[in-house]
Image (cartoon, rainbow, N blue to C red; front, side, top):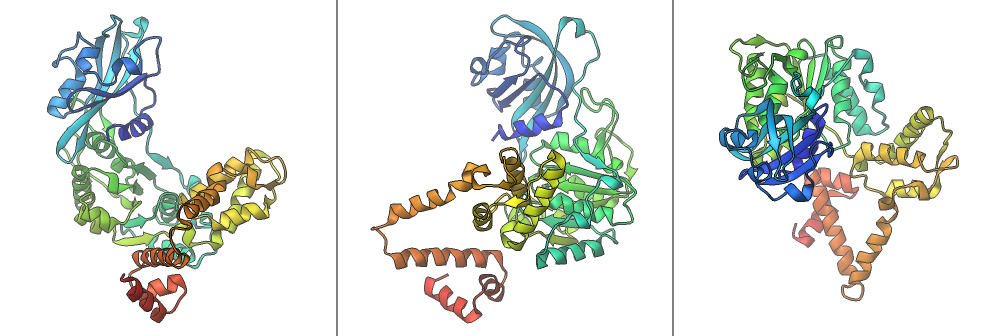
Length: 455
């Protein structure tokens, strides 16, 4: 569980030399150094050992990791003198943050910038990346960038145009790769706020203490290394703040966001003064929000406050007629970017595209075509230019069938397959009428099959 924070942390900081993830006992579970010339420890020397055993001159009082594990408060940009268990010494600037699950501290993430002798007395800090996406009006997507011939998507485009004229909160629900940020930017681009900032923040798996600082800002001295810093609510004042994957945000931060939205004012971390804000909130989830509420990962009151208007984006497999259209669109895009003259895809490649379920949705299709551009040598994308996992699907499926041949009668295999399809259709719809429409059969036939299979 602790390792899932590594990718997010690496995406938060501009420049680091080393990263450590330790569990609640101080045992190191992950270690990496990008400067082996300064810190010569290797992963096998560190992982599984206690932080005080790796750096024996540290104590529970001088180790930032041990202090954060004890009191749960983050430490930013603290200089430490480190001596390894192999006798090597160097200075480092460390930022250490707790990893919290519910109300429990389950570990810490510690990032370091190593200081070479000539830099040890300089004022060096570990700076955050400008992790939020802030774009000007002309850089944002608009409705014309939503490429579709699908009736559901055309209705969504019409809906976007209508709700862009209001200030109501919008919640976008769609699987990964369906275009949630494209929708959010289009809402802002066509709104009266279009000349004001559009700020985007992915909230996935960022520790609550860090996310709170990013959203609300900080006051100098509020914790070790804290400086006066503007939060994203202030940056987005007058415009739109897009919060992606709010279902991954820790509950404690959700409560503070709810308060900020309702009161239209925020207070920086460590600050005393309230700051008025005028921000339209567009948020997104990549799973059924009701499931997230039921499992305690999304506050119900926040859901209703953010979901005044809801947009449900269909998966690419549910808008099959768009696969060909999007394929042509991305081919044209990469022709312009790469100076190529690809005119399309072969018949076999088209068959594969049409039969594939595209679990990664439009983003996956885009990446597959970009990858093929790097491999194809002619003017058509061929089957051989596609990723191996697309080509091996039929072989894997044939292997599963061969495993039951001679053991299970054909009619039983067909019935099992049909039952599974009906279960999926019922799970994706809210009524028998909708499920029958999705399956393209009559309501009466669907009811017969539901009774037959005991669904």
